[in-house]
Image 1 (cartoon, one colour):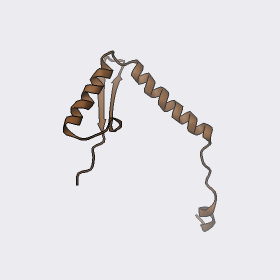
Image 2 (tube, one colour):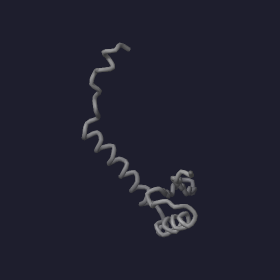
Image 3 (spheres, one colour):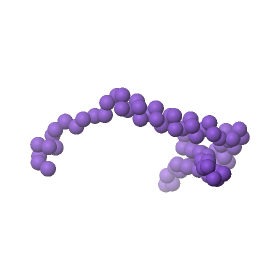
Image 4 (tube, helix red, strand yellow):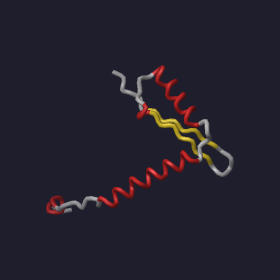
Length: 86
């Protein structure tokens, strides 16, 4: 790698490519919610409330997803971004 290669302009992704990627994420998220049971939104809210009893986290710091396979197997995935302790 030469020194001149460092100064060459780097190509940014196009606006259309960025929009397409974001749309794919939204569609994948909505597909996951569509197959969820009727009680899932309430259960998700209750899980967040229980976590908030013990740790100060915002709703955007907690992610709850339900993955269902064809083998009648359901996996509840919970991701919590915990605050740093000082």
